[in-house]
Length: 486
Image 1 (tube, rainbow, N blue to C red):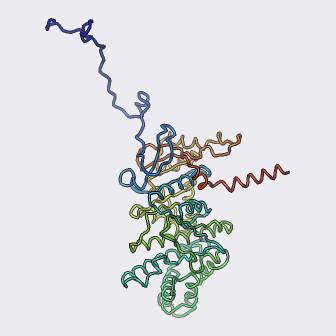
Image 2 (cartoon, rainbow, N blue to C red):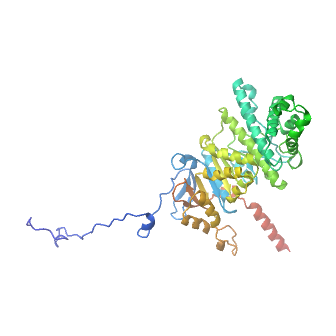
Image 3 (cartoon, one colour):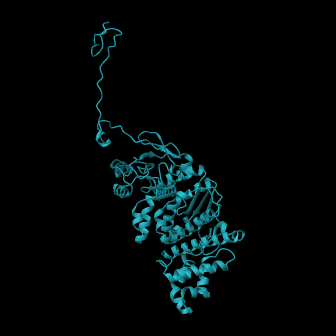
C-alpha cells in the first residue's frame, strides 16, 4: 500500500483495513449540580460508612445503614451526641434502644438516671443490669449520697480525701440549689445569704455525720445553726438569721413532707452498681403524684447517678464508657435550672469523657418553654452539640424550626413531612400504626452532607423489649371486650 496515501476518515472499506465509526470528542460542562441535574439526574452523595450499630436498609438504595457517632469523632463528627426528634408514636424510643443495645455489645455501660415511664426496665434486665425502683415502699435515694468512693473516704490519703470531699460537697451544693429553684422548693434561685447559709450548713452536716448526710440532717443544722453560720452571714442574733434563712429552711422542710415524703429524705436503700452492664432508675411510680413530683425526682436521681459516676472517674475508678438516653427530655428540662445546667455541662464534656448522650424530644418548642432566658439559651445549645441528627415524622412547621439550627434541603423536609402525612394515617383500615413509624432521616455533621433515609428493622426480641404501646393495646382490647359483652 502506498505510504503517501492518506487513510479515509473512517478507514478503508475492506477486511483488516481499520474501518471504524468516528466518535466525536464529548462536550464539557462546568456548572453546579443543581443546574446539571437535568443532564445527569442520578447524582448521589456517598453513603455512611458500614460501621457501628446497624439500623436497617436505605429507603431508596436498599443498602445497609449503620451509625457510629462515637467512632466517627474526629473523622465525620466533632462530638458523639445524638439528637432524636419526631412525633409521638413514630419510634423514637425504639431507635434509641437499638443504639443502647448495640453500644452495650461494644462494651458501653447503659445508664438511665431517670426512666420516667419505666420504658428501659425490660432492656436493662435483659442485659443483666440493675434496676432501682424509686417510690413509696420501694427504693429510696439520698440525693446527697457520695457514691461508692465517698463511702471509702477514710481509706484515702489526706490530700485525696480532701479533694474528693470538696468535689462531693460541690456537687451536693449544686443539686440543692437546683432543687430549691424548682416548684417544690423556693420556686426561684437562692439569694446570696441563703446560698451562704446552705453551703456552711452542708459542710457542718457532712462533718457531723458518720456516713453521708441527708436532707433532714441539713434542716436540723439550719434550724439550730452553729456560730460559723452566723459569722458567714454577718449576723449577731438568731432573729436576724431567721429573717435571712426562713424561706430556705421552710423549702427544705417541704422536700421531706407531702408528696415527696419517703423518696429522698433518708439514706440510699439500693446503691448503684457501677460494675453492672446497665443501670436504670425507674421513676414510673411517681407519675401518679404529678409533674412537679416527677421533676423533683428527675433532678434528684440525675444528681445522684451522675455524681456517683463522676466521682469514680475523678479517682481513676471509672466505669466503662457510658451511653445515656434522655427520653421525655421536656420533663427533665423543666425539672429546674439545675437540670438544664447539668445537661449543658454534660454535652460540652461528653467527647472528653467518652459518653454518648441521646437527647430525645417531640419538638424544639420544649426548649422555648423554659421559664428563664438563661435556661432557654443553654437549652438551645443542646441540639448544636449533637452532631448526629435522627429525624422521624414531624410536620413541616417543626422541620422549619430544625432547619434554623441545622439546615435541611427542601427535599429532606418534604420527605420527613410526608411520613407524617394526615392522608395516610391508617384510620380507615385495621392497622393503626403511625405511617412514619420506623422511618428516619440520618444527618451527621453541620455541613452540607445529604442525609440518609433509613427504615429501622427490629428483631423479634427487640419487638418485645421495645414495645411502648402494650398498655395502650391492653386498654383498647379491654374496651372492645366490654363492647362485645354489651
